[in-house]
Image 1: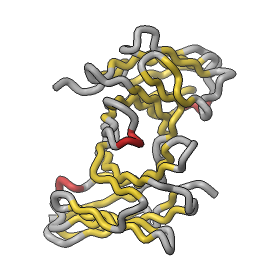
Image 2 (image 1 turned 60 degrees about the horizontal axis):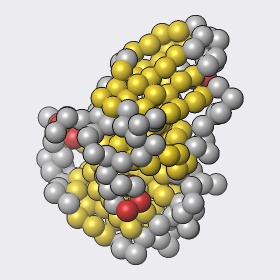
Image 3 (image 1 turned 60 degrees about the vertical axis):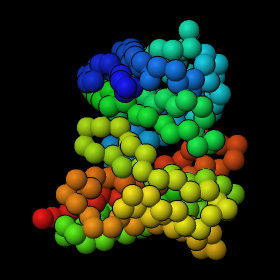
Length: 116
Length: 111
């Protein structure tokens, strides 16, 4: 089966600019996650969707980050305006149900964002 | 704190040796743990998981041990191969919060 698709793979922007990332989860997966992974660290969950509803966005910096999953399939993550500290890899993952019930999360390859 | 940490940032082993990667967690309420493998340029990949009501779980060439008394988790890889070279993360679930990843251990396997 096809894996989680993300685009673009790389993005370089200047601080204060805007950027958007796109994720297409594995077909049939109800749960979609966005993670931020700063170099040398483990991923940090930004937001979790169940179908098109938000389950957890407690770690999403809502003053500059937003995410949507309008039809319960694809999702976009936006940063506006970007700061230098937003430089990281943004990972999208999906699972059939929730990871806590044992449904494995499948990760995409990520989008590497560099803010200059 | 609630962070998950690993004892060593790097581990170097010879092909064929057994590898042990350690992880310490600080929250006694954590009820579920997952080990992930991340190769360069790729997203993390699930290896094995364990719930807090267990102390050992085995997979293919991998074993996870959980010691709740000292809040310690380990991943054992038998007969380590060059393809096992990657960064390994442990992640813990604290009820009511998100899955929290540790900083990772880089495993290097030389042949």
